[in-house]
Image 1: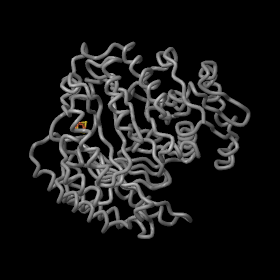
Image 2: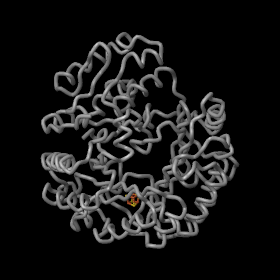
Image 3: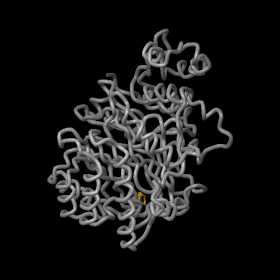
Image 4: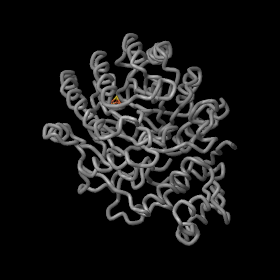
Length: 462
Ligand code: SF4
């Protein structure tokens, strides 16, 4: 497979706000009319599929000890660790209720603990969480599963990493963002490189063989030179996966970001230069660009999935387990069961209240219709592969692609002129220059984007 190519003029041209397409339709289009009953029915019906899908479980732990100023996640900053005990009580109840909806022969193949900060839970609480998951679901064998956990290097010690290994976690994900002390101080996330390295070594020694690191470009005081120093330190660690996210400064929407003074942010040209340099340096170091903002070593699962066409996209970003039904548990978590999306209450009181009433805390969702499923398939193929096969779509959906998507194919013309893609009689091929601008290509097929009654504040595409 050819490597993606970076073009600064094209990035500048295509820098517009757009969804990340971890779902289609995207979460702002979910309906409040969708409730726990709809979710339960979708789950039970999915058991009856001729080939029931394996399961993937996400558990959201919303608590953090301190506020990172760039953060737009759903989290609760508190030093009152007793809150975690109450939360765990409810989370375990929800996990038990969710587990009861699915047939026991459906194996839990993927587990992800995210947040917030999963390691806000102490070792004993983590152990009880895993016990609860094990009781509610049938876990796949250790060779056949991916159990991952987001680690905050500031809050874990050697013992916790060893326990996570004992609990079966084989993949860790760490938010590095930037190793520069000035940047760290400006975003209120001080974690010296030595501390991060130590935690990674402890995790690897505990059996977590897969490592994913997150970086962010566009943070205060970053420059090409400063970010390059972080990149070199990261390359020395050689994670099998790397994400480089664009910092979207939206202080009107994300209150924490008001702590970041606009004048400390790199100018757009510098920001783009950081991205260009990062792309060049990572590909030169042997990483493959996966989709928009992910990079992976060629022998990693993610790169192999991209090359053999099995890469998928869901709420956890790019995934090798996209064939699973995804069960989201915890405050604000989103599930994707067959053609249904459902989202939990994004505030603690609502989350607890529903569970106290013996109900799942689902507050909104969406049941996809034919057009949604068709467009989701098209968008996912564009985001995950470099080729969209009209015959395949026509066979699966019994449509004439060129007729159904006549308007969209026409709208792709300027993108084709810019060498992002090729439209042929049998399909659409994403060209190397288009591989980093996939959101822009996918947006052409998004019916909801054009129907938007009021603007949704998406981040810029680059
Ligand atoms: S970045 Fe992570 S640790 Fe920091 S506030 Fe957000 S969720 Fe918490």
